Length: 364
Image 1 (tube, rainbow, N blue to C red):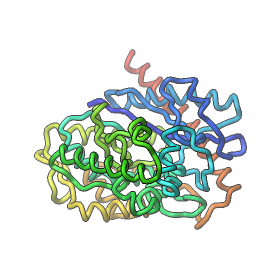
Image 2: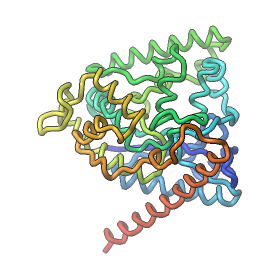
Image 3: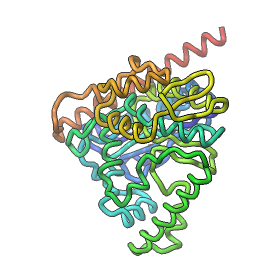
Image 4: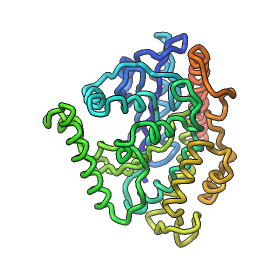
């Protein structure tokens, strides 16, 4: 099964303040702009293993980090910038989103995530399993602070799902299980038509809307079906250190691959030789909420993940490494960003070394 990853990173200056970073993407084909100036995105081509994903991430991040250092800038692997992001929107699509969503877009401007693409197989099974794996976001949560306030273990997920305005819930919330991918497509089409009406009511012409949106990318739900790629995209996790994402793939990719042979059924969560069992959707919603708010501090969450053979003891999310406190001041946030940037540089170096050792071992 082919995999692909997209990771978003904040760009900060030598003092830890958010700054423009889109010029960095000129140095690598696998770096692309995000819709605000202080975010850049790293993408990988399809790879056949987590190790292949690690190689691609190291390749592009090595380049970006080198050029960032030359201009006294750094990349930061945090799910939020900790305090308010006032970086300007930097794309026509972003401008349209501001016109449509208004204040509701502030949430997206303050969030950075990891998106994993799984090659399509049995799509209904993949959709349902990845929906059930939403609580695995707790394994890589990277920021408890949003706009200076401690919100949750994953403040990015909390803000996205609970602070973007009720009228946009259909576009961002976790969707229920489905046995019919065509039903999923119909729901996407409904969302597309509804958003087009909303855009028209806000003065966006039909031509403008069609130029920047299609049904496939009109929602930012934790799981998306991508026909063009074609993949099933899992968007639950925060952005974080690349090694944390690779570890996550090592646990989850083999499980998703098993959907080619095993049905996904509702029952007591776990994996047998005959099926993969996921909880009732109402129970899953409770699990996801707890994962967002408490992360691996909740036995409810880590026991659930271990039912899918995930060794939660090998995960040490960045979110749990912050100092205690209900708020974070701007000067403290700048220092934390710089510390997270140093962790990223060390993490990329360590991954590079591990890959070199593996290559030497394989060629021996």
